Image: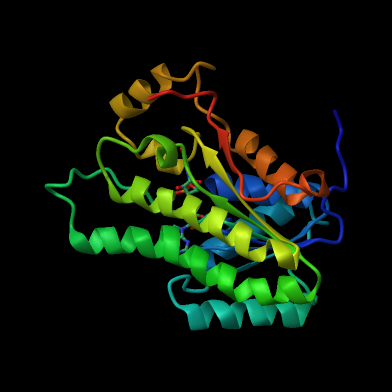
Length: 252
Ligand code: NAD
């Protein structure tokens, strides 16, 4: 089936857009006509992702920035710059995230802060910075990357599921708060997906998780990105406050 132009004239910001699920979302949105500003953790990685995408298709409208997502002032100034250049921001994808797998006994308190800072506070910072622009232009859409661990927890690395439960809490609460301003807020909860994050997990852990996937395999980043595309498009005009599982019916 060929679907085209779902995001024509839309401007989207995608955090963690340099690789993995974020890059697949960026690619999918570009294919559907969106203008993308991807955020990376460093300007060089953002630039490299932009160069790669332009090589794939020179007509793609894509640029890259690297604000410090933990610093509200930096985030707010970056969104202001984007507004100055493009006039509107229609879609924000809060996708940047890190995981953890240490046991509680070994878990460093500073690492707990680090994961909450990126996986949760950055979503607060970006959503707070973008919401007034969306409200003033008649609406918009925010999509957060959660995880299947936000439903099941996980047996080690408790900071990661804790952060993703918080992502769901932000999603549902902001959906209720911002609906009156025409801003839809949803989350996608991927299962095991073939990205660097998974490549860095111990093989036995991936095998154990894969064995519990009824579809019999991890997801591809593009399969996760398809659901972001649906939620970002007008096809999802009455969907807000949803946490959409894309995990092959994983049961752990
Ligand atoms: P990845 O490691 O391939 O990509 C992570 C992205 O986050 C990169 O673009 C990186 O630049 C960005 N990032 C990392 N640290 C950052 C920082 N300090 N500041 C700004 N950006 C930073 O991971 P991925 O698997 O593509 O994960 C993307 C999202 O999907 C994460 O939120 C993750 O929790 C979630 N997720 C992944 C899986 C999976 O199996 N891969 C499953 C469920 C949820």
